[in-house]
Image: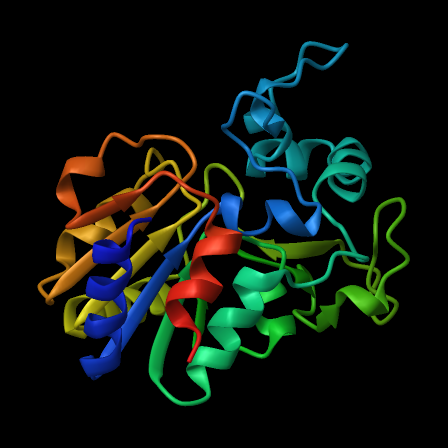
Length: 243
């Protein structure tokens, strides 16, 4: 990021009534959570049994083989020791004095743990669960994080509140997130390949003054943004959001 870009971004943020942030897996990499689609991402790992990670995270697999699903899920998808990194903390601190909405693809809950309040978790969260039989809610801390969790009240299967392949995005969060994008003056998109739909379609709703994309690798939508920074969002976000 050069001085001209830095000044342009900070000036736009300073004068903005509303700012919206759209984040993907790259935002949480510095917290020790692997991303999905980079060369070293989760989807490029090869399992000995030949199963694809999309299949392991599908609703069909969850219902047909809960034991196999949870063996993978506890090992690969839940990181109870992960802590918010400088990107999450910069956003939470910025929200204290600004109207900021966060739309995230991540299911790690780190934006909430950092202190952000207006967070739309479009793919759900590993911090929340519910019983499929009696609908009783559970937190991650209520569960043993091993084997298949069942409800102690009714014996029903407990499901994570994450959007699995084959399931629709949460409608309320998605609609509120789209409204936030359409009504904001500045949009910052970071840590996402912009290859997963419908999330990748959301930036097209922006009609504000300045759109910024921060991602380590080029995306198919780079040309749609006013400023594109192929840099580490963990370093850039504190720099442009800090007072």
